[in-house]
Structures are given as structure tokens and as C-alpha cells.
Length: 239
Image (cartoon, rainbow, N blue to C red; front, top):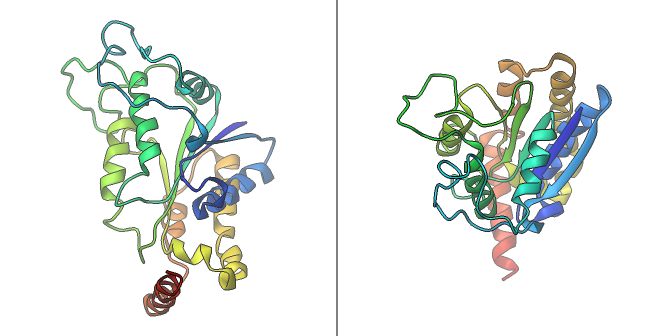
């Protein structure tokens, strides 16, 4: 199994979210042979999309921009069995560097010719053979829950991939992952992501029960508010 991890956090290896993604990959590895490659998107040279739509008209899926890392990244995506995008929620969406990368994936979408959306499918199709591939989003947020705040981001993926054609592993209360005093407790909490990785590797899918369970916060509302209060007091004290 070839696994490609795209770390979209500007903080690279210091990202709390990549810690969650690593746990999921640990589960994949534990369940069988696994070849893993991890790429920091912020280390890549990615030119913003020009919006010229040449990839839909003149060049049939080939971007006119050739002098950056996108062609190589596309090759890696097409060669992988499991593609994992890992990043924290930024202002109810993906980080800017990840959005620039995602915009450049437009060339992997079929040309839009006025076709109507089909429920459960990408808005107007994806070029290349994506059958059998598993696409997974791992994201943490600083909020107490994942309901509502992820809706804008997931709507975008619904259009790109088609609803039900990707898994969104969402982790609330992500700030708690950066608190040294909570490290051991959060290690226990993150074991469910290891179990999810094992489940995908052994069954080829993740159950709705598993997806829902991953979105359960590590602390109750009252405790989390106290942790946030202490966190922001420390931040203000470091100014």
C-alpha cells in the first residue's frame, strides 16, 4: 500500500494536526505493509493558478505552468493508494498554502461543459483512474466541536470529490494537543486514530460509527473553557 501524506500546515513538523495524521498512519502500518511518503506543502514551489482554463480547453488536463512542483505532486497522487491531506482549520477553511495547491489541482478535473451535477459524484468528473484510491482529510480545529464550522470546507470537497468519496477525520479542541501538561492524556485520546487506520487497512473503509467517534472532543465543555482561559492568559502574558 502506497500512502502519500500531504502536510498542509505552515508549521510543518510542529503542526498539532500532523501528530493526529501520524497516529492514523501508525494504524495503517500496524495492519500490513505500508510505504509512506510525507511532503510538506509549504516546502514545495507552487505557483498560484492563473485561471486561464487551458487545462480544460487546449491542453486536456495539462497545466501551462511547468516550472514548479505541481507536476511531480500530481504524479505522486496518481501513484498512491491512500492520499492524506493534513492541516488545521484556518478561518473556517484550509490554510492559504493548501488552497493554492488545491487550486492547481483544477487540471485533474474534467472539462466543465454545462453538465448537471450528479449526486455522489464530483461536480464534473475527475481525470485519470482514481478507482480504489482512498482520500482522507485530517484536520484539527480550536473549537469545542466540529459541527457547523467545518461545513464551508466540506462543501468544497463535496464539489471536488463528490459526497461520500472521501473521509473527513476531524479533531475538535486541537489546542489541547499543544499543551505539554496534557501530552500523556492526549496520547491516550489519539489511540482512536490508530484504530481508525487499522480499520481502513483491514476493511478498505471507515464506518460511520468510527467517523463520528473521531469527532468526539477530549474534554467536556466546562473543562475546555477553563483550558482555553488559561491558554489565552499565557499567550497574553508572553507578549
